[in-house]
Image (cartoon, rainbow, N blue to C red; front, side, top):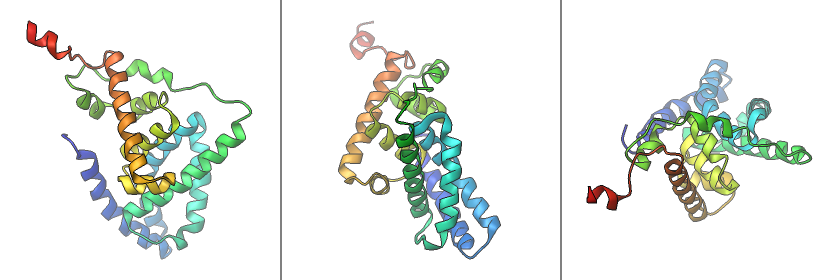
Length: 205
């Protein structure tokens, strides 16, 4: 797939998404269903990274709010993904505040057993990861890094859009995403996902 394959796919999605949203705002229910289908998988994965097993419930609340406020949304497909991610995030954080009484153990550790086959580079390993595997690893990151990685990689937002969702400066989000990805790469190496020996050893044989 090479680098940026995800974002090129995302751009194609956004054209279709923008059209669907515009039609949905005029009351076209089939178009709303198309918009839902295009953004729900990424949003659900993002919210699962925040709240775990209750993600489906949190997202059904989020969609009620999205449907209710759709008339007020202004923007294109990329804008809609940012807007819906913001609503989903608020719902998830509300849910976490209510849960605070009994914090959950990470249900994500399980997925670590199903990591991809060995790859020669960290980048390939990152690209080969499924959403579930990314979530499993992201569960080990500090919240700011986890959210930055999820919004960039899973929801497919660009830096400025991710920054708006998180209410932070783009620079801070870029740094958090970068640190998070670097940490994931180290983690993957430690878990034996990459078969890359240190360069010095490779050269001496």
